[in-house]
Image (tube, rainbow, N blue to C red; front, side, top):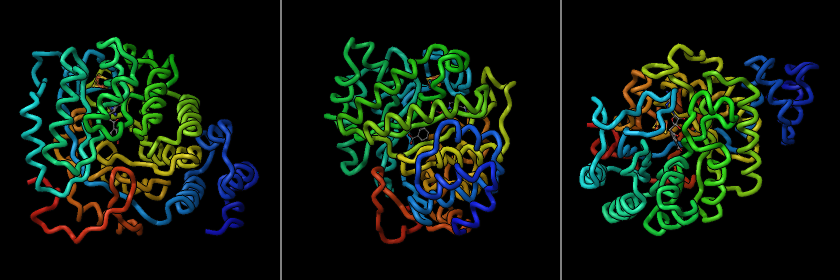
Length: 380
Ligand code: V47
Ligand code: SF4
């Protein structure tokens, strides 16, 4: 839709912010708050789509990856988390390096380009052990991109070795670490953080670790856990801190809003926000984070249908065709099978009238022969 038409739809109340968005000017925190609180969903869809087309055309990217979750035993006990267990609890796990390498070998014949490793944190989450693990994974699949260890895990390794995070990141990089996932950010506001994740490292520490990673040429993602007790202003504050850091380093590859899922955790009475709220959130994130090119929908958390709707609200990246090894959202109440074949994912994108394209972890397009059914990443 052309500029004048969008501005007419925007009306007086939103004309100025709409013009900024369309003309590529940065929107302010107050404008983001206004969009969150008052903008009609139809206008948000138009503005976010306009911006996503300017940045990414009609393309929707996906990556063929698999998740490895070494353990769900975790000392932090975040109140929103349905996944963590105490050692010895029913449903807890803590894989040995050999068990994890066996899982990796099971993927070696599949066309995966990335392994995503993250999990709980406990006394066994040792820097040398994780360094050894990723080194061995690199020997099993030399071409694989290893995206591993959230800032929370990096912080734990640094603290337990009484070393700065830069030491830990450099050590892991030398053993094959190529980027960091965006977990652990939650909501940066200290009061909300205290309510939902009182034991977790602070927002400042999360940002510091990503700043250092970027300086070491380790790119990363940023997440935001939304739809619980936070208010819109906390989301804006969160994204502002990410936008500021991105201005400084340019190291964030994508922004990933994570919808709070309420089953089986201490905050279950909070409930979940409706799909319209997810779409509003994607659109405002797209418009506010003008310096992060990719906006990712993590479909195992959102569900397939909702992920397809999110494409019309600024999302240009759908997290991969992943395996059932991803348990964090299943345990938090998403009953959908956490796996989708490449064909299914491409179909979801084309049915929404976008253009699917496979990407690698650094957002280069992967051109490959059509996958034969035998080599698809569909779980057997
Ligand atoms: O930090 C935990 C979230 C995150 C719940 O970087 C929950 O590519 C909703 O960060 N409801 C970990 N969310 C996962 C993560 C991630 C996921 C996909 C891709 C990438 C990436 C990173 O999961 C945690 C927390 O914010 N989480 N429990 C819950 N009940
Ligand atoms: Fe541990 Fe992560 Fe769950 Fe918090 S969200 S309890 S850090 S596994």
